[in-house]
Length: 570
Image (tube, rainbow, N blue to C red; front, side):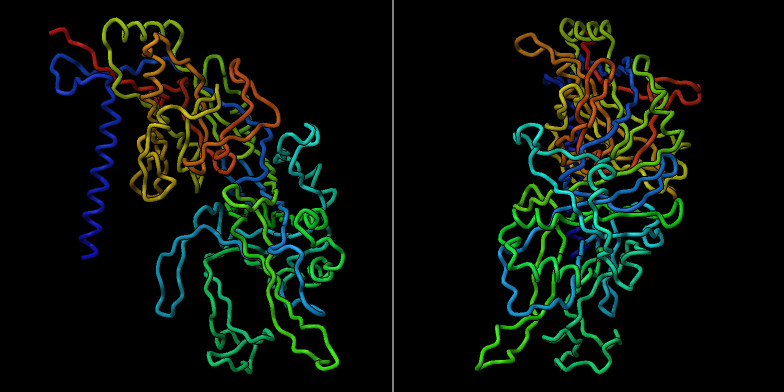
C-alpha cells in the first residue's frame, strides 16, 4: 500500500511539474497554441558579452549560516573559515544558589544530516550534508578562545543610524589583537581540538543520577563508571560538533560573577563577556574539511551543583545538579541577536587569480569564474544596441511573440576534473538594480528539497549519468525578463536592458544581498552588493564564456536561446 501511494504521488508530482514547465514555455502573450498560421523559430545568435569580476572583501556578519573549517579546492585554492560570536544568557540576572560549582560545560552544534537507516542495535546511521572536503578523515586543529573585541550593533561612523557591518578580513585587524590565549575546548579527547573532524556518528547523553554518576536502567550507580557498554542512553542526538569546555573558565566568568552586576541583563553581559572565537588551523597541507553550520541551533549548557544557603536548622543542605543555558548565533526570524562574523581567509591558486584578472569586460571571455565567499561573480551584457532595436521592431511590427528564453552555461570539465564538490546550483539576477529578475518572482514551483525550489527558473546542475557524475551544464530560464526588454508595455515603454549577474548560491530561497567592502566596476556599472547566498557557499565552478578560442569548444559557448512564434502569412 505504501509503495503504491509513493508511485501515485511521484506520478502526480511529475505531472504537476510538466504542466508548470509547459505553462512557462508557452508564455505567448496571445492564444496561438494550435494555430497553423504561426511558426515556432529559434533565435540563438544573440550577442552576449560575459566576463568575471573578483568581489574583493565581502560583508560576513550576522549570516544565517556560517562556514567553519579548512577546505582545499583543487582549482580555486584553500579556504580557512573561522567564526566569532557573541553569547547571551538563557535567562537574565540568574541565581545559581549557594556555593555553585560547575560539573561540566558543553557546546553542541548539529550538522545538516539525513537519517539513512537504523541498525538492530538502535544506532541510527546518518549521511552528512553541507560538508566539503575529506569529512571524517579531513582533520584540522580547532581552538575555542574568548573573544575580547566588542561586536557592535550600530555603526558609530554613521552616528549609530545604521547597522554595523563587519567583513571577512576583520580577523587580523579587529579580532586577533583582543582574543584570549586560554584554550577553552581543552578536552583530553583530541577529536575536539588538535585533531577535530566532522563525525557522522549520532551522539548519546547517558543516564546519570543527581551527582552526575552513570546509573543503570533502575537508577543504581554503575560500579564501573568508565565502561561505556554498561551505560543507559538517555537521549540521542543527530551528528554534530560536541565540545567539552573548560570548567574553571566558566566558573569564574559566569557562576562567580552573579554579584558583579555583569549578569543583570544581556546588554551588560555582552560587554562583560564578549563571546567566543572558533579558530581553525591546518594540520597538514591540502587536508581538512569545511562545514556549513547554523550556530543559532547550538545547545550550550553549564551543568553545576549548588544548594540552598545553610541555616542553623539545616547546616548541610543537600546539593542538587542543575543546568543553565547560554545562547549564541544570529537568527533574524527569532529574537536571537548575537552578533557574529564569519572570518574567511583565502590562499587562491595562481590559475584562478589569473583567469579572473584576465577577464575582458569589453569583448567578453572564453571562461567565466564564479566562486562563493570572497570570490568572484560573472556579468552578462545582452544584445548590442542595433540588435536590441531590430528585435523590438520585429516584435512590434511583425507580431513576433516570445515563447521561451534560456541561458545555457556549460562547465569546463578540464578545470573541474579533480573537484569532489561542484556547486549544485547557480543563480542569475539583475545586477544593475541588485534585485531578482521577473522569472524568479513568477516561478512558484517547489521540490522535495527546499534547495530545489523554483525548478522552472532553474540553475540546478545537470550531471553525467555514470560515475563520477561530473557536472555538464546549468540552464536558467529568463523568458519573462526577455519579454520585458523586447516588448513594450501598455504605455509604450521597455524595461531597461540591465546587466545580468551570475553567482553560485547556497539556497535559491535566499535573495537578500551583502555589501562589498569596496565597490567594483562592471563595464561602467558600479556594483556595491552581491547575493548573500553566494557568500554562504564555499564552492566555485568554471564555465565557458561567449568567446571561443578553440573551435572544438564551439558547442559549449555561452548561449542565449529565444524561441519566437512568428506569423507565416499563409
